[in-house]
Image (cartoon, rainbow, N blue to C red; front, side):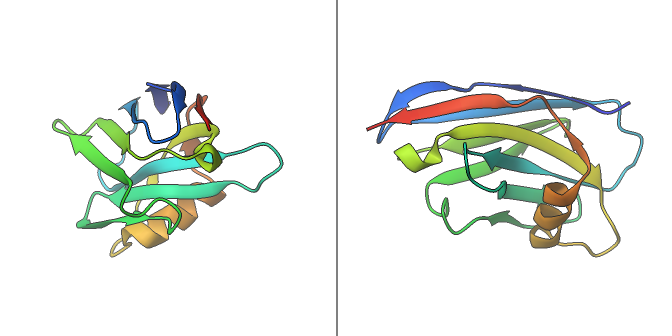
Length: 130
């Protein structure tokens, strides 16, 4: 059973920073997609950032490019999301997501697949005040 444990959420003023962490365990597939999804009240879910175990540059949503950075720790079971220059519109519950990766699947495709399904953590709240 895949388990994803997020941490690092909280409240911060606009312009501040937070770092989210996600510890993954229990997955049995070697090739995977992993990333962060967020959902704000009254808004659709958004794939924020994603990586694939096949390499390639990470995927970022346009809304976070240049402000957020997704990284992975070796051994590759911990995912991070460094969030800088936070804005009130970044307020949301952030979910870590994990799924098997198809051969040749790039991070942009991973982001779409993670948004549509896969394994999700319970989420961590990020609140940015103006």
